[in-house]
Amino acid sequence: MRMLVRGCGIRDISDILNISLSKVLKTLEKQQVVLQPKHSFYDKLEIDEFWTYVGKKRHKLWLIYAYHRESGEIVAWVFGKRNEKTVRALGCKIKTSGIKWGSLLTDNWKRFKRVFISTNLPIGKRRL
Image (cartoon, helix red, strand yellow):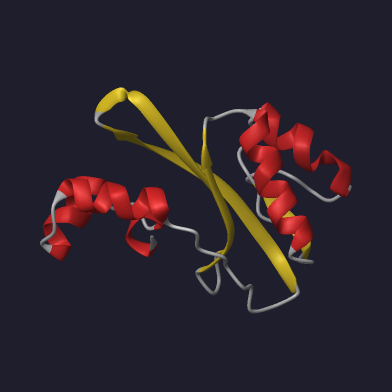
């Protein structure tokens, strides 16, 4: 999971670990990782996303995650479609973990704004 979050593709993971592509996919599919944040407050959290695919490029799967840049800690993540439902799932994971933050850095994608606007905190890529 760490390699995937850090930007390694599924084929790269297979090659690096010297295991089959299907083994990587089955492992990711069964993965039930629960992250335990190291802190209850973060001065800045960044939310970003990237896509990968399974089998064919038209079967895109998005990883949307929140992380603390200074420590490199991934605080929460979800897989899904690139839509508001998936962003809300990330927001729910963050909320249920009890994490608080000073500012939130994202791109200006409207779904991020819709989900996190209720925080009344600065949202955007501009560093504060």
